[in-house]
Image (tube, rainbow, N blue to C red; front, top):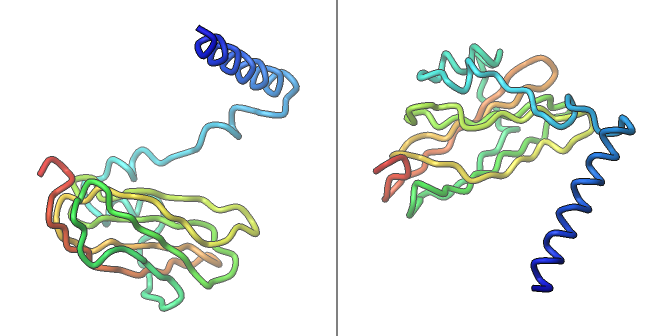
Length: 155
């Protein structure tokens, strides 16, 4: 009984803290809710997704690194890390070329943020994982092939 009471008290305390922050104007909805491009994330082709994000025409760059396993035992949870040595990186996006919806993630970075993201993605089959980095108004890319032994998208 005491564990349930603690859980309820923690939840009530957290809710009231958020309520106070919103009431004081410290936590505005535009800061809480992330903006996203519905058109880009629902695109069925890589080119359409990149065009919707304004990332078309990327140039290959050695300053962008994609770290992922050479062979993924399970396509449902493939760890991917993208980093860059470039200055003033504005965004990092990850694309899995053969997925039904190829745009996996797009991160907008604030000024002074380190150009580094790490996540786990779902891959339906063996394919290239493409990282796109927007820096200084230009778009750069790097790719890495990941072989999937067990499909993660219903396979």
